[in-house]
Length: 637
Image 1 (cartoon, rainbow, N blue to C red):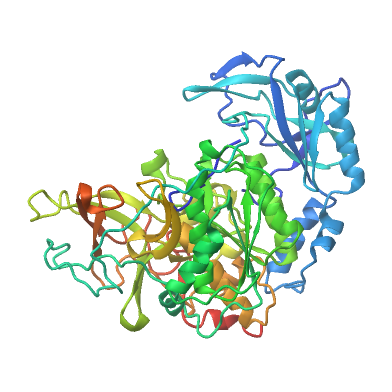
Image 2: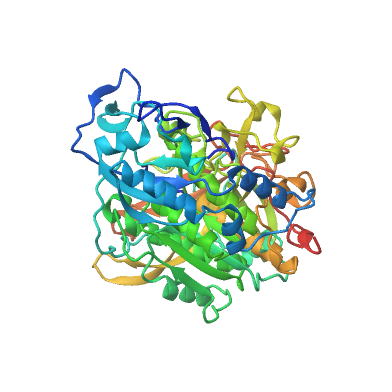
């Protein structure tokens, strides 16, 4: 089980994981159905360290396929396709469960099989059965042997062959997770820590793009460049993305992250009051939280407080009358994040779900991809759309050594949100956007030049071509063949749409932080990442849903791509003015005050590793960012 990183710092098509022909057998003569993808790729013969000791305890989740897995995928596609007769004919949460969820009989049959194998059921939900047991019982249940394998400098447990289940279960099992232990650590329940140490921006700043030019600093690309903005606010973002008079009234937006900020209600209210956003109405901001938390130290729980703060304040800034429900996961691990997503679907907590977290595709496994896709499809049937940040490390070569996309943004059933650098000028006028990709060069010791200009790659919007997800139908005819076939077969390309993400043209947030003297106080700082882009797009979609009379947009990708090439999008490129662009930035060396000095740098814009923002669809910004007219284009549909 992998942990998930935050996109701001920080699955496959339906049916990709299927019950195949009879495979491994636990009992002689008993037919078995193989669960493809349950043996990890790293569990190779050369890495095999021998059998896992029988005394080891295995904790796993057996995910249920439901009554009609193929029908679920088909209906999710039809109900999301504007050209389908079933478009917009969403089911209620109860109707969805009754039609596609696991039946009581299926749950009982799977439970009986697991217990008869010697496993102990530790929990049951509408989506899975959690079990624990020793290695022998696990091997008996899943028809495979568990071995220890070397993976990097560590040794982990994994199946020596794909797991299987009795064919008599008649397709009731979707997949099983937890048979491999990488990096499956023991859970420790404890109290949430206080907020992280304070972070502040130094300045000087621009109040809008270009308002304060760094005349005393060296030229960059042959000209003086402006200081970075202090941080855009809701008024500027609403103008940039064509909000008009829409406010999101009557629309429900959910946000999923790990853990929960203990000061979010007060921080959000204070921020709104200080920065011109509408005050929160009673009950407008809600939280749905687990009974207890896990792995708080391992996951850096306090770091997720800022993530929740950014997501909540960004959605409210763009869509000030939308209802926001924050759904916190018990940890940053997949099972807990899946639980949060399932809560949204099972109770239909919202129509739009913003998710600013993910991991690299190489860390995804087919069985987890199947579990994620199932909840996304269930959401689509109910008219729920999921929006995932595309990542903050460009093509991921600099961070992982391998060119790859992020997940779950790679799922064909979610809207992957890429990032831009945004210039909002005087009087809240949209000037331009570039693809977000930053090169950083520092000021020389004598202050007369930039060291190694334009400098090294610093960060940028995630994007590129998936290695495991086939091209969805809505991308055909839009995504260039050179991108779709970059990995040989015709695959999904990320992202789908984009919005502001560059921290150097970022958003101002307000959060209670821990000061150097140990006290806590509200403070404000500029932040970015595709963790900003995702809630901004969620806010824009809430505006669009309001103009549609409140009717859900559902899984939005078919509609997003249907609008491709129209003036409803800003067609974002890396050189919107025809020239290279940059901003100057001054930071506190200690991230708090000037007592330990200042760090001055120039940040080049539109330099996202090997990814390029070009005319038309690209793997940095997708179809582009919403332009004036996008929100109103949903009216009457």
